[in-house]
Length: 335
Image (cartoon, rainbow, N blue to C red; front, side, top):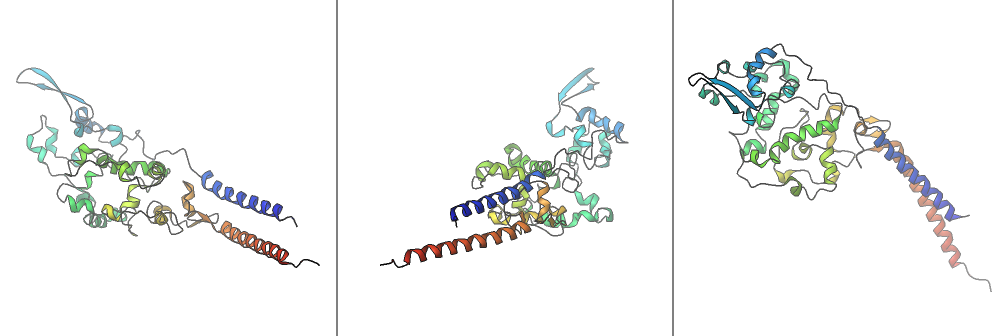
């Protein structure tokens, strides 16, 4: 029997199976994302809001100084500029400005004491309201108060430090393109952690480099594009779609097998909203395959079984072949 030919044949079968399993992961990737919200939304308060946005919607504003009889132009502070398109795509797009801000802002020039106006937080509107019970705002607030953000900046850190009330929109529940959602969610973290000028408003720590701090992470750019910061930096919560318990850096996920395994933590976080679909065409954690192929986490039960059978067949052939070779060597020579 030509064992060399048999070994080559078996090797070709195994290579073919490997490429087949990999191709499953890449051909299911979705494209052509179309957002449900569009800039074509027209608020019934559009005209009222324009009274504010004619100044706060642009870089330069102008007003008449009646005492001097002249027009004065000023540059609008970047923190006070509101992007109309982003606002009318946000969760709060149906609001008028004075739903959240004092009616006194309708007078111009604005009174100086309005700068000290106490802003609403999420629970002021959404707390203990049955309409918003599915979002678990009370539990989110409880988690947040245990997080490293709250512990370090109890007075200065609020919901709005991460979730701009003018632009924030739910992404993970409605997403049709997970990559865009990942980029959107990560931009929330990076708006402080990669902008030292903004970071200094909340912390006295020295400037850090996100790239350098993650230099231990293999294929760094691939990870940054395919998982959110919170996958590694929060503690998963079964009752919340997005965990808000930000952990200290020493508690961050660092072991590869926590994601790259059958019991991947990604199923309890990034893919949680879709995790009811546990199998897809025989794949473990098959819902991931809609977006990408995660080594270790995406395995096909059928291919696992076939590979196991082939392994023992090959092992058996090797054992038999070795036995015959050894027997041939020790066979006594004829005199």
